[in-house]
Length: 225
Image (tube, rainbow, N blue to C red; front, side, top):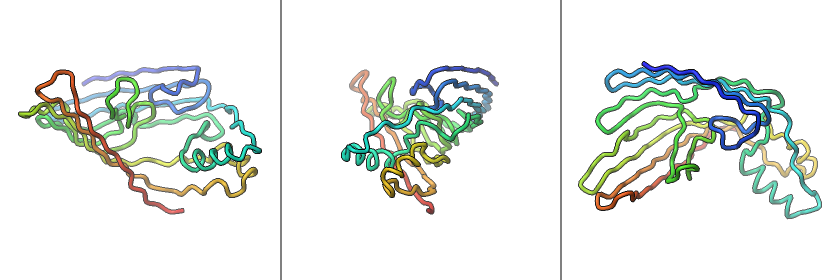
């Protein structure tokens, strides 16, 4: 059995800080790590408590007379992605499951349910598909925890099925942007976003330090207005 408690305080807004929201000014993260292993079963309880001041950032700077610029904002930003500079209008105090998981291992394989971050992509600092720049999401996982050796080389992989939650706040600039272009912002639906995907890594036995990598993830959306 292992346990660990840590706390981190940051007074800037680094967008690459692990597990933090993109909030402004003071941030603090406190986490507990309790791990238990018995035969093939491993249980990790690693919740996090997050605090951020969430102060008002500068608003979106635009020129309403620039038609091309406005079209880009409405069509390619606000109606396509939840790129929030601020979540709500008060400080955020939030408890989540963090890196908690329950897993069972057998030979080269592992199955479990987890809220851990996933790192998918052939990169050391910035993964191409999923990384630790944001909070993890609840998911089921079937994966290898060490390479499975075959006559053509070693294989590693992971298959996941998870669920993503919606943003519960309205975009801060929406009232002003709706006054500029009435009806320009599409109504967001209350959706259940299911995510499923896989990643496969192959290291040919005939080469050293050479890997072939394949990955795919898709979303299934259902919900109501």
